[in-house]
Amino acid sequence: MNTIFALGINHKTAPVALREKLAFAPEQVPDALHQLATQLQINDAVILSTCNRTELYFSGAAEQAEQVLHWLAGFHQLKLQELQQHLYLYQEQEAVKHLMRVAAGLDSLVLGEPQILGQVKQAYNQSRQAGTINPQFERLFQKTFAVAKEVRTETDIGANAVSVAFAAVTLAKQIFGKLEQVRVLLIGAGETIELVARHLTEQGATQLSVANRTYERAETLAKQFNAQVLTLAQVPARLHEADIVISSTASTLPIVGKGMVEHALKQRRHKPMFLVDLAVPRDIEEQVTELEDAYLYTVDDLQSIVAQNLNNRQQAAEQAGVMIADGASDFMQWLQLQDKADWLREYRQRCEEIKQELVLRAQKQLAAGQDSDKVLAELATKLSNRLMHSPTRTIRQLLQSDQPDANELVKLLIDL
Image 1 (cartoon, one colour):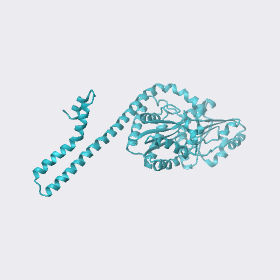
Image 2: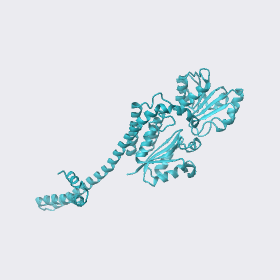
Image 3: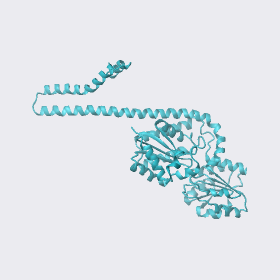
């Protein structure tokens, strides 16, 4: 039976600069899964890559964990030394518990944030499409989704739902006070930006614009919040209109550069601009922090705001931890039963082969004209002797051992 592994980095073990280097763009995932399957012979593999984590869940032999680590560094053209002090590797039940904690939001930057479950499901679906989900991982992820749902419905972990998006809006409200007259530019049209837009409108913001690479997707999002629609090409010319810029795209290169912001600030006559970069890799160049009147925050900068929400959720997290421990234990028991079931299948298969061999022999004897009663008697004798030989030898060894429960075990085994 293969070992289950969880290998990765997250917001607790690595800075954003390293996380963005190790992030998988959505279009990279199918090729990465294919490489794991073909180059390393990894049959079960799931890649989870978000703003706050890059994790690989896979099963294989013990030595394959080291191979996957080298592959991960090579795929992203990083030196192994850059990664090693930031990586964690969990095995078996600890790996299962980690996955369940992640899916339930217990390992998130914002404790209990809800988007991560959808991201885990998306990663699982990508792996199914790539053919790297086999029965063992199918069962693992279905159990994980069930436990995460139980945590959501039976604890207060999701009460007053918060997220990095909520933390960004909270910070904006602290800076600007009322948001009714504040002009907001949202770059991207994915789940995070949709959540930001929802929180902004709940806090009174009415002047929203959405810019996205795909105009139709931006238009769909904008209709929900009565927002204006821009293309990414329009952003440089319109950036000066925004008091708040919040960006979260899957771009591998920065969308907003220092020069672009500098030009916008001149047009604003140096009226301050608040920028939040929720993307990994970054959407906004780090050098923007060098500009006066530009206040740039990354996901790492939101940690202190996020910390304020933790106290309300610790009790729920403890309750959820018990559910996750039980769920992981249930899965491992099922896994062990599958291992034992393999033994039973092998034993029954061996018995079937013995039966087929002796029946074939008897049929040949009958075809040769031998007496049918003698053939049947010989078949019964040989079949019972062959089937009883190994169990009888094992029982004799067990009874001769010093095992205290040997007698009871033998009685149970042979149904006496």
